[in-house]
Structures are given as structure tokens and as C-alpha cells.
Length: 425
Image (tube, rainbow, N blue to C red; front, side):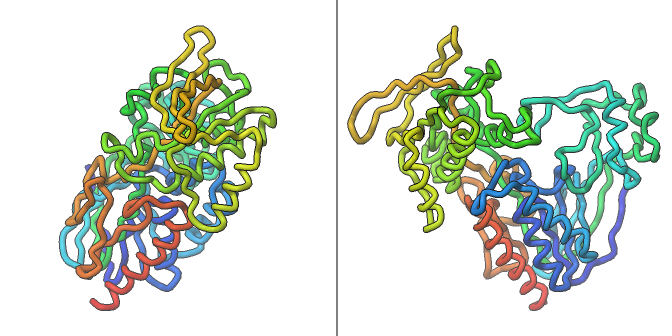
């Protein structure tokens, strides 16, 4: 392990997490003149938004918003982007924090021009976590087509290293260095914003809903990848077991949310996500039937309510108020039967569909792994902001469930709070 030291950065801000909240926080602070270190554990920026097909309020692709932010990053020398890095320790007080970062090797340097010759030469395949393991990439890969930084990365756990080295031989630009090592970096910053984001709740923990048992049950984020042109099926939503167009799909709302055995809270985004997914399906398959089983449909705000009313008018979208009790699979056809009780009529429903989508909720990343800093959390792992103490703040979904718009608004506020900490120093 080697160590790097950064010069003490008086008046600088550390932003941990390169998703939409972290990007917004970093850019808002940098564009008014503050030095910002933006740290991301993945080899790319963009977070969960990068995995979406479309996002509210305009239902535009992530390339739209992310491309603008990436351009702002490139044009602003005040932001230092550090990928494949995690915060190892934090000590100090508001206005004066000493931070240690641990940086994993990318094995690809700045000479990379993303020509793809290394990928063509690589003989090793790996599961593609960006697509929730629904397809594969080579051991050297680019996470997605507009990833930032625009460089390849090697999966150390899959690469054969020097005994293969075919990627090294194929690279004309001397961009691949298989001898890169883990490094540490020391920073001194005045404020820290934790924008560590969220993880989809593990649907395998929900025993009665069949995820992981039946081929044709997927999650809402997996459907986003199916619908994305850079996803595993190049944007075509298909029945997983046979690749055929679905004639019927069921959505199971609050899958693990509002449930004391899983996530006791509402994840805020799931209802709107499923209504959006209904538009994906109806655009591709005008005759397909969409069944949405829900406890309550929550569409906060006038714009979202208008969207809901439009979906409700579609005669091929059937909304059923009733919590799904179980799902079953026909072992021959692989079709899924969704069992629920209609809360309005009292009727027991057994709806057979080609595939089912579980609207799993969001769980803060910090729920599974507490951060190495003096922070307070809710019982569910969201970071509680202590504005009286100041110095360290949580932005976006690290603080509470939120959509992209709310996350951006919150991130702008946390950038201001971080700046106030420096001003009062």
C-alpha cells in the first residue's frame, strides 16, 4: 500500500457520494468558489440515476441531466473527483476535519481513450452488477456508455492479472497498469456532506413474494434496466424465462415497505415508479394488461397527481387496492399467479400474469454499513442532521427517502450549510 498526501485545504468541502445528490452538492459549492473533493466508491459517477431509463418530472433519460453535470464538472477546476475511494476515518471538529481516504486501483490510467480494444482482447467475463447481474461484461469494462470518468476499469476479483495480460498487449496507449496498488490520501477539510445514497431493498428477504425462486419475478430497478437502451435487452421489456413479449404484468406495491418485518416506512418513490413503468410497457406493448396491486397510491404534488390520473384513464391498466399475500408459479408455463384480497370489494383475487414486478423500497446505504464518523442515525439507518453542531451534513436519500427533484433541492441546501460552516470558522 502506498500513501499520498494532499496539501491542507483550508476552506474546502468533502462530498462523499457521486450520485445526483453528491454531484449537485459539489457543483453548487464549487461554482461559488469553494474547493470541493468529490469522493465515490464506484468507478463512475451518477449513482442510481445512471441506472434509470427515465426519471421525473420530465421523464427524460439520465443522459440528459448527468451529461450537463459532467460537463460542469469538467469545466470547474474547483472540484477534485476521486473514484474507487472510500472514507476510512474522520477526526476533528466543524471547520477542521482530518480525513483519510482509501483508494482502490483502477488499473487503467489517464492515457485511456475508451477505444474498446482491451475489451475485445479480454477472455474473461464477469456478472454485470450495473444491470443487476442480468448480463455480463468482460473483466475490463466501462460501466455504461457515458460513464464519468470516461475510462475503463478492471474488476480485480475476476481479472487473471499478469498470467493473462492480453488487455495490456492490445492497448496502443500504455493505459493499462496491472501493478497499481491500493493508496491512501489524507485531506483536511472544513465541512463534510454525506451523500451516500440508497440501495434497493433485498427482495430475497420477502419470503412470500417469490423473488429468487421464480424466474419471472423481478424488481422495479431491474425493470428500469430492461427498459434502458444500454440495458441487458437493449431496451426491450421481455419475459425473463423465455424472452417473449409480455401480454400481462403485475406490479406488487410496497414490496417490503410499510412492513414492520422489513422497511417500516414509505419509500416515497415506489408508486410513481410503477406508474412510470406502466407507461414503458404500454408504449412497447399497446395490448398488454398491467395490474397494479397497492395499499395506497401516493402521488405527492399537482404534477404527479396529474400523471396518476392519466394512467388511471388507460383501460389496460387495472388498479387493485389490496396487499398481495403470496405469489405462485406454474411449473410448466412459468406464469405467475398473484394472490390478493380486494380491499374495496372483499373479493379474493388470483391473477395470472406472464411476469411480476416487485416495487421494492429504498434502504439507505448507511443501514448496512455505518460511516466512519461521529453521526447520528434513525432506527432505519438514515443520517440525522445536527444543524446546531454543524460541520457534517447528510444530503438526499442518505437523510430520507426522496425522488430526484427533492434530492437536488435538498443537496443545494446542504451545500449552503457546508459553506456556512466555513464562513463561521
